[in-house]
Length: 110
Image (cartoon, rainbow, N blue to C red; front, side):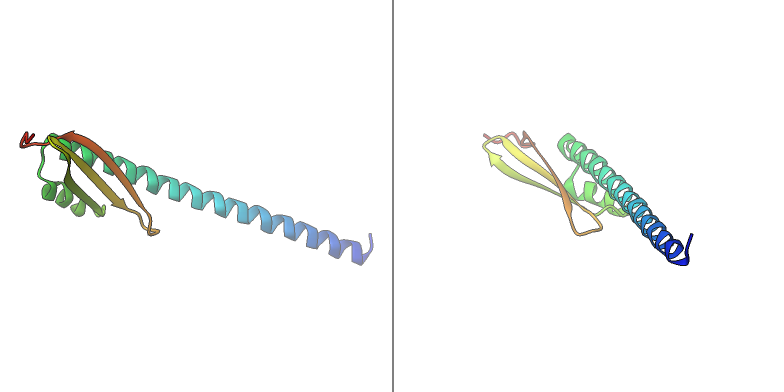
C-alpha cells in the first residue's frame, strides 16, 4: 500500500465518520423535538378537559403557568348555545400547538 492509497483511505473513512456523527446528531434532535411535542399535546388536552369541565379559564392558565408550560385558553361564542374552547401551547422553537373543541355554553344561552 502506497502513501497515496493510505491518505485516500483515511479521507474516505473520515468522511464516512462525519456523516455517521451528523446522522446521530439529527436523530437526537428529532427525539428531543418529538418529546417536546408530545408534552405540549398532553398539556393542551389536559387544559382543554379542565376548561370544558367548567374550571375558570384564568385558573387553568395559572395552573400551567406554575409548571412553566406557556398555555393560553380562550372561550368564544361559536353559535347560539355553543362555545368554542381553544387551547394554544407555545413551543420553544417558536411554533405552537392549537387544540379546539365545541362545547355547550355554560350559561345555556340560546
